[in-house]
Image 1 (spheres, rainbow, N blue to C red):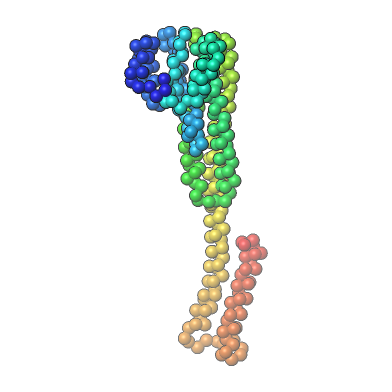
Image 2: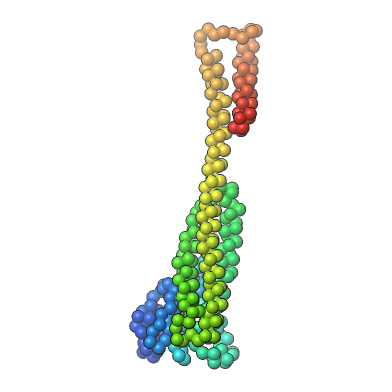
Amino acid sequence: MAKPTDAELAQLNDVFHFHPLSIEDARSAVQYPKVEQYPGYLYAVLHGIDLAASREGLSTRDVDFFVAHAVLVTVHDGTSVPIAELLHACGRYERLLAEGPVALFHRIVDAMVDNYRPAIDALEHRIDELEEEAYTGRDAMVRRVIALRHELSAARRVLIPQRDAIGRLARREFPAISDEMSYRFRDVYDHVVRVTEETLLFQDRVTGILEVHLAAVSNRLNQVMKVLTVMSTIFLPLTVLTGMWGMNVPLPHFPGGAEVQFWWVLGVMAALSLAMLSVFKRNRWL
């Protein structure tokens, strides 16, 4: 059922006689991953990558599964590529339908998990770029780092329960899952675990990027303040000299006539500036 209407969703009760609580969950636009056993069938909610939106960020869409003895019903928003591909393949290869609803369920879930890999690789590439940019201390990158943190937090809220749900399928907690199918779900579970661990690692890396960026900004600010402080320190005694010799009162004169007093004061100011710069350099303040 792709973008089902209310009349189509009513078939879940009228035709298949599924439990009203599971039908209510299927009507909901957003449900976190879970697996529940109902009388006669297995109900699962799992998330797949939204391939259209994953170019700009990690976005997921939930798919509802009703797995009965001879029936597999999926409810989604029409953007699930694995379901569309499997539906097309079932029309060409009859053996896929002969495997049974649980095997079809596994094929869809396996494809959904495999589609996470390109999105995770794209996220890692974005994080690598941010790590290189963090050392420059550009203020414009803070907004992108915060947005990436929110994106990873949203992915974590989905991947952790999805890992637990697929883990229940791999441990054969439900009668519908045979030993053979539990082995297949174990392989899917391993992939989900790796994706989840990488996402958690990405969160730590993004936190480190933000810390490095703030340190780079602080260091750049300290460098600017150091230069301004040195300039202020140098100009302070020069201001005193110009203020004293600029007063309209009789002052001691340097050797020579009145026409050379300016050059004497200028020379004293230059010598004082060089002496202060030499002291700053010796103390490694510059």
